[in-house]
Image (cartoon, rainbow, N blue to C red; front, side, top):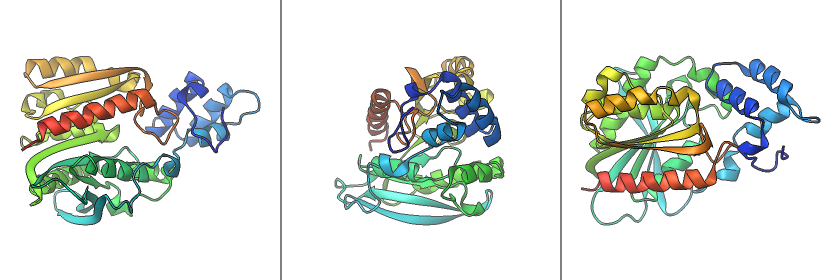
Length: 301
């Protein structure tokens, strides 16, 4: 296992450790459960705490677009959400030197740790592709992303998911109606956010495009309500999420929903997240290019 000054790769870890980490990230086991399990699979001279540190995000090392980058304009926006948690807050980013005319809009939905620095960076990357991006923080009413992934997961478990989904509906509708927008709306989400992207596709007939990255399938009886075009991105080694795909795909076909799906062989859940060892550079670059191309095609005026 590499030292903590470098970003490790998934291949540096035993498959059992990666599976335990996925369970830990998604709340299936707690921190002690991960440490106890990882200790049984650690190589000589490597501690379970060392494995946890190596698998944890390194935001600064992976940042691609600085918050102060002159190519973007960013601000924080607060919105009322009476059916949700009362109020929501999000990170609104647009290109500083946009092409003439109004721009398409993209809602960016985070993983199950709230709006951390990685997802803020994703929003800035989206803006540089000539979109207006808005990334809400589901943890806002609980104090916002706390700056610590473990604390963020703990806070996330306290959310009322029904209200939180309503917050994302409000965020999507705000973005759709933004005066600087061209009236076209897409959503891209990762892990938890992928599930929200699928949910919004069933909930919002005005949504034009959705890109769930390894996201949970929506309620299947709502699939016929989908009007958006979908681009679904799956990790190859992701049994928990992929188990639901056959039934979801059958429902999409039965409802004649426009979609394309890609499975990236040999990748782990979270392969697009370049702050962790689960990142797979080749697959992430391909998935991201497909995402950008898809959004540009579906959201043009």
